[in-house]
Amino acid sequence: MSTFLLEVVTPERKVYAQDVNMIVVKGVAGELGILPNHIPLVTPLKIAPVTIKKGNATEYIAVNGGFMEVRKDKVVILAESAEFPGDIDVERARAAKERAEKRLSAKRDEVDFRRAELALQRAMNRIETASKK
Image (tube, rainbow, N blue to C red; front, side, top):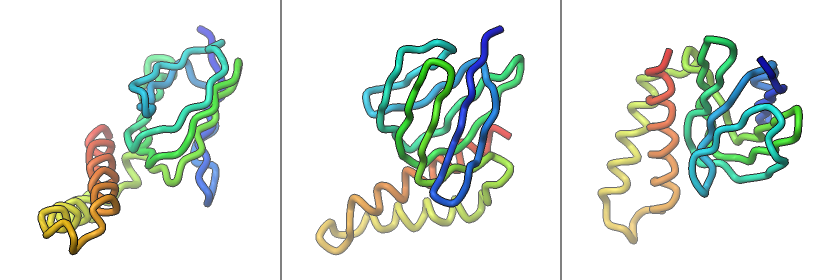
């Protein structure tokens, strides 16, 4: 079975670097499945889990935005942050979700709506990814 190198990099560190069979990401234009020898591509990513297929195993990484560069034999995801399901503090993510929902329900002129919306998306991404342990 063909593979390609997947690297997930954040400003702090390289989170992941392994040969994989396939990944599924959510780009701004929709969901993308990447297989070996995919056409070169650069796309911004949404706040969403990345699904990694490696042999018969499936892994997940919570990615909070960023970009993906696809080359013939390598995919690099440059993310603002990235976490494995086991590294996610679910209670902290739930608290962040509640705070963001509370901010979004306030008067629109009293809150930075876009910032609260992004905080809610990040919290929900972390909760969803953590549930896939």
